[in-house]
Structure formats: C-alpha cells, structure tokens
Image (cartoon, rainbow, N blue to C red; front, side):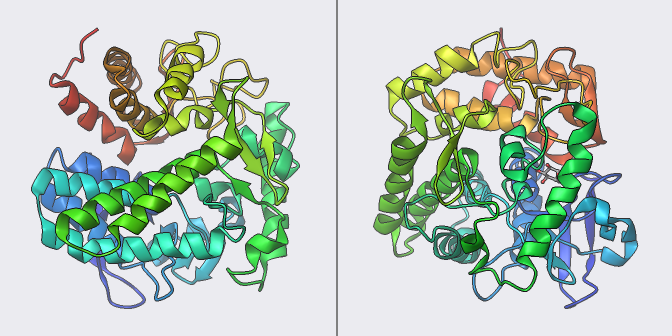
Amino acid sequence: MLAANRRHGVSEWDGMHFDFVCPSPTHYPFQWFWDSAFHAIALLQVDPALAKQELRSLMQGAQPDGFIAHMLLWEKSLNPQWLLPDYSIRLAHPFYTATIQPPVVARALERIYDATGDADFVREILPPVLRFVRWLQRVRDQDNDGLVAIIQPDESGLDASPKYDAAMGVPSQPPEETLPALRRSMQRLFNAYEGVGAEREPRLDVFLFEDVMVNTIHADALRALARLSRAVGLPGADELEREYRRTLDALMAKCWHPEAGLFWDLSGAKEEQVKVLTFSSLFPLVLGDLDHGVAKRLVEEHLLNEKEFWLPYPIPSVAATEPSYDPKWLTQTTWRGPTWVNVNWYIYWGLRAHGFDDVASELARRTVEMQAKGGIREFYDPVTADGYGATDFGWSCLVLDMIAAEGSPHPKR
Ligand code: GLC
C-alpha cells in the first residue's frame, strides 16, 4: 500500500524532484508535513532508503526563513478539486500553504538514525528541521513562555476537534451543524489574516491555541534534536536540551490540572484552559521525562478509564464522556470521536517509556485487531472498529512499527 501511494516526478514550479508517499490516493494526493514523518517511520520497516527519501522530499519545502508548509502541492494541476473552497486551504505560494503542522519530523529523523546509524543523513536533514523549530519559537512563541501557538485549527493536524469549537464559535451539537459552521468560521479567520504576514498573525489573537499535543511534539523535537546533535557532533545540544526542559516545565506549570489529573490546552492571549476532554489531555505521556506520578495518573485515571478512553478499540480522539463525542462520524468531519493509528502509536511508545509495558502491548494488540476488522482506513469506530474516512491511509501503516516492537504479528494479550 505504501508503494501504491508513492508519488514521484519533477515539480511544476521549481523543477525539483519529488518522491514521497501521499496519505491516500483517493483523498489526499499531496505531501503533508506530519503525515510524511509518520510514513518515514512506517517505511523503516520496509525499506530504510525510502524512509530517507520521504524526508529529503519534504525538506525541499524548507524556506530561507525556516518556515515549512503543512502541504506541498507537488502535482497541483492533476488535482484541481483541491482548490475548491470546501477544503479551506490558505496558501503562502501557489504550491504550498501558509500554515504549519507539528514537527514530528525530528522524531522520524531520530528513528532513521537509530535504524541505520547514518550520521551523514542526520547532518543533511537536521539543519532545516532545526531552522523550522527556530521559526516556531520566533514566530509562534511571541510571549516567550516555551509553548508555541497554532493560529488555525488544522495547524495541529486535529482539524475539527471539538476542543476548538468555542474558540471557533462552532456549535458542538447537533452533529450536522458542525461542518457548515466550521467552514464559515474558517473563512472568517482567512479574512482576518489576509495580507497580515506570518509575524503579525498570532498578535491578532483571532484564534491562538497553545495546544498540548502540538507542544508535546515540539518538546519531543527539541529532545530529539539535542540527542542527534550530540550523536553526530553538531553544535548546540546543551541549549536544545535546556529548551526541551523549559517546554516540559511550561506544560506542567500552565496546562497540568492537578485536580483533574490531566492537561488542558490554552486558548487566546489570555491563556484560558479549555476543558474539553480529548486524547490531547493525555499526550505528555509521550515524553519520557514527564514526572512518573503524573504519567501514572494519566494512565490509571484516564487512559484505562472505560467511561472515557479505554473503549474496545482505544484511543478515541474525544473521550466518550463528552457531549460532542461522535464515534460514528455523524458530523462527517475529523477528530470528533474515532480512533486514529498515529495517536495510538505515540501513546504506545509513551507507555513503554514510563514502564507500562503491559498496557502498551494491549493497546498494540487492539490496534492490530481494529485494523484487521476495519481495513487500512483513516480512522475507526472505537466500539465496532468500522473504518471511516480515506481508504489506503498512509500513517495507519504505523502498526508495522508497533508489531515490530512487540516482536510478533499478533501482539500478546
Ligand atoms: C486530515 C487530517 C490531518 C492530515 C491530513 C492528511 O486533514 O486531519 O491531520 O494531515 O488529513 O492526511
């Protein structure tokens, strides 16, 4: 399937050679920033040379100021339907967007290094990844608190998550009103950003989210870049390590809610905690340096809670206790209840980092079973494992990495 989703050729604009795996041939024909990082990790189980190729292709999107767009529209003229207003894309250039996605790419680079030991590859790819992280810090952390902000919902990759509903002025209920309201609201944001420029956009405070998942991935990127810099003899490792600790400390100081035993995103310049329970609230578990007592509460009080997240096919994108929880995809939009494989993959490794190996194995087992029932789809019903959304969906191949880590195609019970 990864081979069938592969796209290669010469770009219509700068004559660059692209060669990458698209997220879905029927739904998503371009190169997406965090998808490609997940694809590279899955490709390691098949062909490490293709994993490297995936990141090389992606880094051709790096701009002189460090920015890397969330979509590179390599074969734009073959896919005109994507330019319809329905998709709500904001462009910085005819061939790439003005928006970002989380820097999973640093973790992908670390995994490629661990699998191949190729220090030259790290020396080639780390500099543009680091410049992107510096861009994030400069442009998206203008209050300098160690947490970076997204300025429209799809920048997290969690496009229509109900945690953004209040900030977007979108009704969480009834389901059929969510999508049209969201489209109208996106257009309002685009109008506000028209001609403003990247540096000033966050200052408008029309949508500003210090998102727990995005900042966990940002912290993880700083950690991975520090480790890789040290390993291949590039400068700046100590500073990156300090920045990693600072972002982790900021997550604890500003987002951790000791009574609830979970993390909340911050909305607006006023940084109000947004109390909508989604998997993001558990996400700092991904960081091995998170306080163990905190990790234990996330796992025991929430992840393993059968009313919230521990459903037959965990981890639902929204807790089953939320009024907006929509496991059957009635809203016809994303991240409002179904289970996604990239989330399970991240939490799987977080569980292992904190010594919850049995929970990790059970999560892997149920993820494989879910995919066996539902196919290689974009997301799944957390109760029945029915597959929804795009078909032949690239990052759902991350099960390969979990299976390899478990050492068996049928992870143990
Ligand atoms: C959807 C997802 C987003 C992903 C994109 C391509 O928009 O919400 O996270 O990057 O599809 O797969």
